[in-house]
Image 1 (spheres, rainbow, N blue to C red):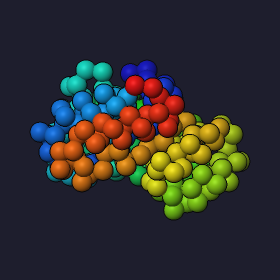
Image 2 (cartoon, rainbow, N blue to C red):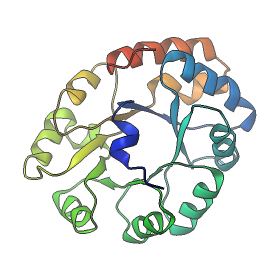
Image 3 (cartoon, rainbow, N blue to C red):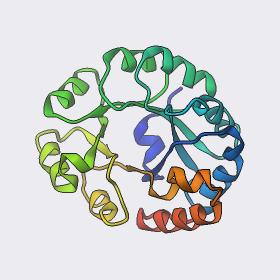
Image 4 (tube, rainbow, N blue to C red):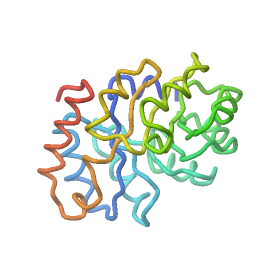
Length: 211
């Protein structure tokens, strides 16, 4: 696999972060995201059905699908077998990074401190996830933290919203953002896919992506 996080995320600058409870919800959700202009998803490993949902997403033509909340090397193997094209972690684990490297899948580890960013650089990474971005000072906090690290780009996640997405994406150090407001678990659970489509369309416009 010759893909990189930069290559995967540069065109789709907003990655929907999905918590899904049933494989049966995958098809209408994937359709709503694609029709709204964001044919991508980070499926978080937060529910018992997450792996099955990931497999179903990966089978949808034209969808860019990765796995989130990946915390162990064994989980890396599981999500890659399920079809994940990228792996996202809440924190920085060297063993997770190395397993991703062994399997040839791009990885996006989470960082919250300068020390963790320096560790990521030592591991050869040039893109990291800032998490939870909202609790780390939002766009202003990101700019302060990123200032010493000119070679690193960030994907802030956690607290990204319609109110601050433009400020995040206008920051040169930001490659993309992760957001969940357009795919809130309550909307998915209730089958409100028209609303998800509408919110996704609006979010795509905010991020500079046109359906």
